[in-house]
Image 1: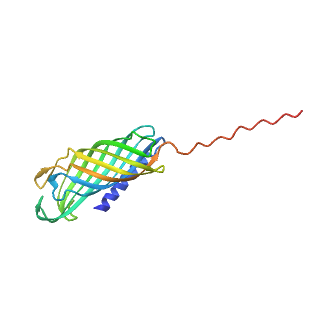
Image 2: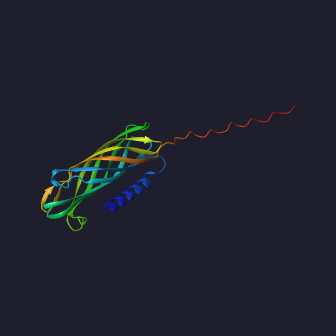
Image 3: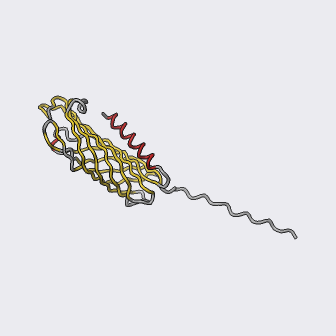
Length: 216
């Protein structure tokens, strides 16, 4: 499952970066590693570790960027009773794809705060051990997200910071139980920036040659 998350994240990052690398565009590729806190509906498997990637891009002068993202996580617990029709070691997981906008109010500083929001499609499943996608209960839902954070520039391109995310408006049914997969999330952010104006000084043109002196 973890290998699947990494593969999807790599595809999202490569495709979005290629789309955003046109002349005059700028943006960021941010990798997110964190902890998700689901609603009480999911107890006791309500705190999955998570991994995600978000790519944002826009014309270099614009503070508002398009944001495309992927986020997923999973948690396993040994259940003494029955949870959504499952017993024994039970695993729950989710995978989402999102699209929205992110506002970068600061363009030229070491500290770069941001604020974003958008829509998402989230897929979730619960089942015995690693067979929770195909052998257990699963459902999917639309929802909304908001995120905010701050990152620090290390050199011209490297980013490191923290990110917070919330998801609301989801609705799912598992084994006849109606609930949601709304959550809050706290992440470590590691990424890089691309595009934008060059930080190098423009090359100076050589002075024009002086005309030769006329002989008497």
